Image (cartoon, rainbow, N blue to C red; front, side, top):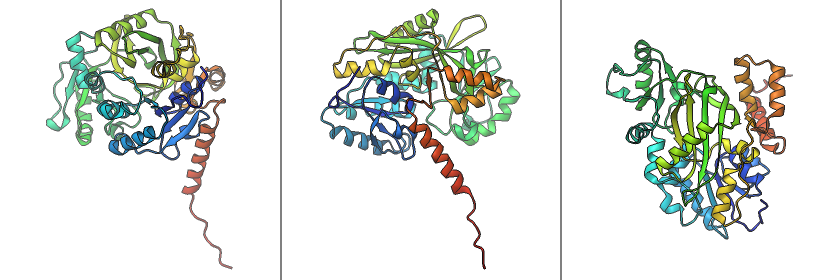
Length: 391
């Protein structure tokens, strides 16, 4: 897809892995990013909208978005990548939709999918294959005696709260017994937010598989693909550092069935964990754009480009099937994950060289070079000032 300079821009609330698939399709991007964000320096970034964080200043961000849209000759297409951005767009859709073109799931469904307690209630109503889960309120008193089988994992209701203050970069905390829950409880009480406890599905993070889809406004699947995690950092319940496109008919089939059950439109990622018996357990549904879209585009299914084409009246680009075996990595974080996994450096370097998509991309080098320069300046700024020599 080659886009004329007078075509609608993509307004991106997201990072490089969302800007790059749009840029690869020839779409001009305006990014919402604070000073120092690498995405500002991408070759695919044609405009920058300075912004406060959506979860701390949504009103200010909304005002900036609307100011940008009003200055465009035609309404831009809005893309959003994390939960805070998704909630802002969903909750203020009435204000945004006159100014932007956008796809998004229904308002109630967004709330049900983002809040894990509401998601559990939805799963019970619809019979979704979700592991048994209980809501816990540490502020209510001492730790409860759970009617779940240990081990369990404890995780926040949403990713927009202060979870990192208790657990750093991990997404969940494994708890292997009632005694471990008792020991963890004071930390959860200090955090001051409700959490969920969920029965743990045995297996490594590489047993997590996913279904990625764009459902158009008529309810048709315009494009989809399946994938699997290779590594995360931290190794358990961490953030993805290495990913692969797969060809998994059962993941695709279950994902498509759940799209129908939920009545979902827009883009979404379904995360499953495959148990030792091969059964797929649904962990979460994210009705938004994700870091997977860069890899999907490289593998032949560019979901953001499909969305942009539909919303601007262009012809859709070809959409797959996705090339199984295509890989993505976040080079710096994946080196840590690979080292802790015991992968020899030479083998890892060869694997990285063959990756189809990388967070640090040779075809778009300025964001990586800028981040290197920023870290170097930060190190210099922490050095003590030289002591004057009296002579």
